Length: 67
Image (tube, rainbow, N blue to C red):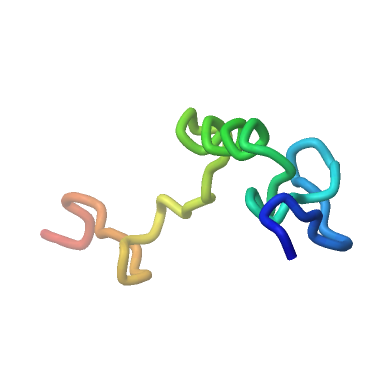
């Protein structure tokens, strides 16, 4: 398959056009750059639970349980 060949069945997640092997999973450098800009500007975000600490336990409230 040559470098500019279309990847069968796959569609660009940005514009929906068939993907190009050279830019997979995108159809062009433009769509790849649009996606990168969305990540860098915070449009895409991984949800997090702020009420739990890294180890999965709830952080203790200051002064709670201490008398």
